[in-house]
Length: 247
Ligand code: 5HY
Image: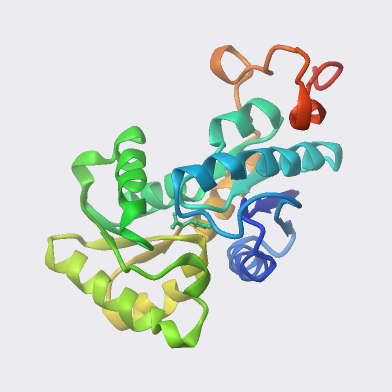
């Protein structure tokens, strides 16, 4: 089985740490490849960057289809382009936010989310509601550390994220979801320190993707996730035309 983990931003360092977290969660027999687009934003912390990350994500999904990939993980907490990727891929496509919320709901009645910048909490809350976890999510908090500063020791990310997790527990949560793929390496350590589940979506999404393939479950091609209608695309996006693409 081949699971491809796509980091929709263009930071190679982040893709590397995302790949390590995904492989740690996957079965030894599963091939895990971690990739990022050749175009797009270095990190995603705004709607503008999220919108402009989607063509690169879809570029990598299309390459994965050519390579016979069995399932995909969209490794960005906004789950950008998730629906579009499901229209394009034969196999299952799992977003790390959706996966983390499901995993948290399996181990706790109520959970909270700790994300990066305050401006991303709106998107996180939107996804909580879209996926039906509104009643279970007691709080969405921001640690106010930029995505690309998370692995900079000077940002003290680990201490700051731990403090925000404590605040989420104080608000009544029994588990915390880490709101960025760049926080994946913190989850086990923080779980140990805080004595409660701290959930990383990269690992959760990789494990769920594997399970769906093993269950022989694929994205339904009836209705909403059917292949997009074939039509010409103009200008910079002309290569994204699906004329003559997948059946
Ligand atoms: C992420 N941005 O997981 C999100 C986190 C965020 O580049 N990778 C990013 O702040 O929304």
